[in-house]
Structure formats: structure tokens, C-alpha cells
Length: 342
Image (cartoon, rainbow, N blue to C red; front, side, top):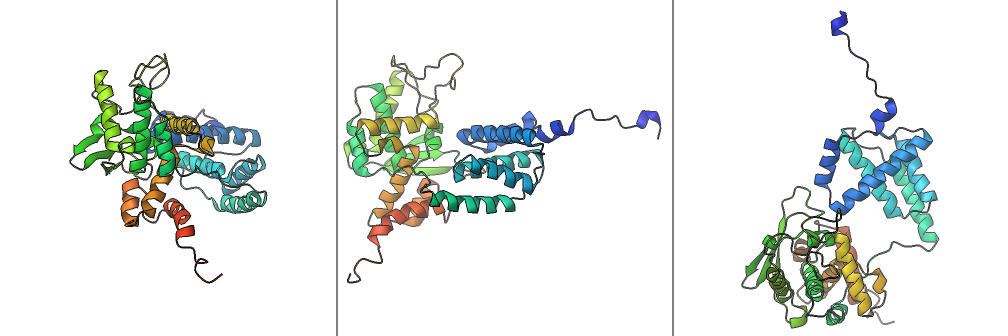
């Protein structure tokens, strides 16, 4: 072969090749993943590559043995099983983006199976946000001042989120243009959600409520009127309010420039109002409490329709999470030990 056709040597070390993900690859990950998840995934991937560097293992592509050993290291650090599962999901997403092929997780599954048993024997359990009942919802709304911007916004966040069975990320992502008036209430377009991988979107019909204080349609209209009064007729539906009462104000270098609240802010609002209402386990309430509360309240209704409940809240068909919520209702309503003569 002539010298002019000789292949030039690659000067990148194996470690650099194994751990590097291009900005284009990360951009694809970010586009396909909700904001809160994408930050967690990137942090998980960075932790994994640092661990591999200390253990002299190859992170990309990672072998089944490397994955199992990493899962074991997290278990020995007493991380929750869900945290370990998310770390594996982040590693899998990085491999997918880099075109490195699927992961062999057989060893990880065995490690997690054994760790879950040890976790349960130690008296630990998976922390779940408590479902928000209608009684608790009314108590929370009663603490809000309807004459303040914060009170009006927080009421709209809570009752709309409950009525939609929405994820906190879905609430935070709503724009004013996603709401369309209807004779029966409002139609809300959810453009992106956790289970909507292709971005097809869904329309959620939110009817008028029978209770003025907790009617989601009236709560949202009051908030939209407040926004319009401050010159906001487009952009995000829910925005930050600073201690001076300014809407969407952004400190230098912090937050989205449009003032949109985050999913974490939704959870903080719910927890803060739950504490103000003096609810039991108020510190444990989160954005997911709205979603669980909707599912259990809707299922407890006399004309409950599982298919409609799932479609309304954007659950996948046969969702284990949804059935878990509904079991909480059936545990007593359809208890097989009741009525057998004990």
C-alpha cells in the first residue's frame, strides 16, 4: 500500500473512546426524555463512568459482569432498589445513544432480586407519595388566599392537576395555548408525557366542578385572568412568582427565561399547602399525590370505567402502577374476607 493511502493512527485512548458521548448523542437523549429524568440520567452516567475508572472497567460497552458489580456496589451503599434501577436505565440509554447495542442485564436482575428481599427483610419499603383525597384537597384549598397571585396560582395548579390525573412534569409543561374552552369545561392538550414516547399528545377533557372552591375550570380561568392583567396572554400557563409578587421573574442565570415553573416546583407547592392544612404525613405529599388521588377517587365512583381512567391520566394499557393504586380501593371495597361469616 502506498504511503499516501496508509491509514493514520487514532490518537484517542481506549478510555476516552469508551466513555465519550458526543453532544449530538446527548441531544437525542434529552429530546426523548423528560427534563427531570434527563438530569438524573446524566448524573447517573457520570457516576458510573467514575466508578469504572476507579475499578479499571470499561463503561462503554459495559459487560454483564461490570453491570452486576456496579449494581452490587450501589446495593452495598444501601441505595434504594428504584435508584439502582434508574442507574441501569441511564446506562442503557447512553448505550442506545452511542449505538453500542443492548445491555446484558441478566446479572443485574439477579442482584436486584436478592437485594429487594434483603431490603424488605430489613423493614424498609418503597416510599410512595400518599394519595390526595377529596377531603384533603378541600382542606388544602381552604388555606389559600384568593386575593394573592400565589394563592390563585397554587389553587389552579392543585385542582387542575388533580382533575387531569396529571404528572407534575405535564403540569409544568402546559402553555396557555394548550387550553381550549368548551361548553362542558376546558380541553387540555398534553403535548408530551412520560408514556408518550413519540410525542403524539393527548387531549384531556376537564369538566366544571360542582364545588366552587375546587372547580378546576373556574380556578384556571381566575389564574388566566390574573396572567392577562399582567400582560401575559401567551407562553407558559404556570409561572414563578417571586417574593415581590413579580410574575416569571428570573434571577440572573437561573431558570427558564420565560419564567415557567418546574416539576419540582409543582411538588413543592403541593407539599407546602399540605403542611399549611395540617395534613397527616404532609411532608410526604408530592406531585404524584395528585395523580394517585385522581385514580383512587375516580375508581371509587359508582360508574368507574378503568379504560377511561387510564386514557384520561395517560397510563399505558395494563399499567401496573395504575392497578396498584386501584388495589388500594378494592382492598376494602371488594375484600374477600368480608361477608364470609367471621
